[in-house]
Length: 275
Image (cartoon, rainbow, N blue to C red):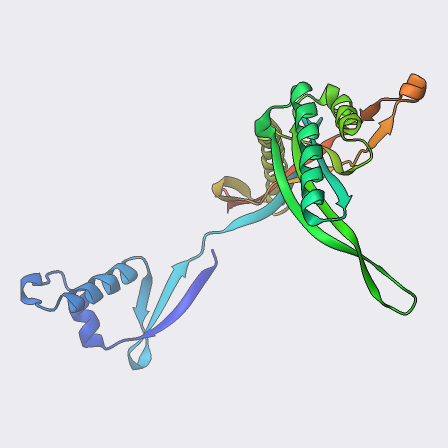
């Protein structure tokens, strides 16, 4: 077995006193000295050592033999939600009128979402802004043309089958004063997928460790340690499209695609010669 060799130079008289069978603790009044002696005794009790020349102590401490492997487990799942981010905007001659108009459009969007069955807890305001807009002449002169106000929202849709219809209703309610910033399937409940990915990672890691043990002609012992890294979701990015079969009244369809949930682990197993 591999051993770590440490050279410790100590006074023989001090060491002899340290490892004597009887220590009169009541005679030690300095608690710091007592703590130091106890720590030193604990250190030497776990090591084997011998006396060398010039009061040099040769201390050897065993290193546990093992194999460390890394493995990644993955599982593909169908998303159970859709993230819908959009903005409403208004351009008016004054900042106040622009802000008021944007608020009206935002109310229309909220009403549409409510009518579509989206819970208010799944709707959050992301940003509200008002800023001036300018035009520029060929000479570079700046002229104020109005004010643009906007309000942005993030909506989590849990009914994936009707997600496209919800989008269409918001567009219909707001009209042309709307931009769609994001429309992407998401995985809301990751527990089952993460559990399966973790199981796959453990199986793969153990298979790797067994292969190493076989190649080295040793036996695989118990697990010493396991470390898990962050979970990552790889999204097969879909997008919205119009259903051509619907003719002029084309409906938005959200293709869910799949997401790959992955977990990476680092595990260490003990190895033994089996003798």
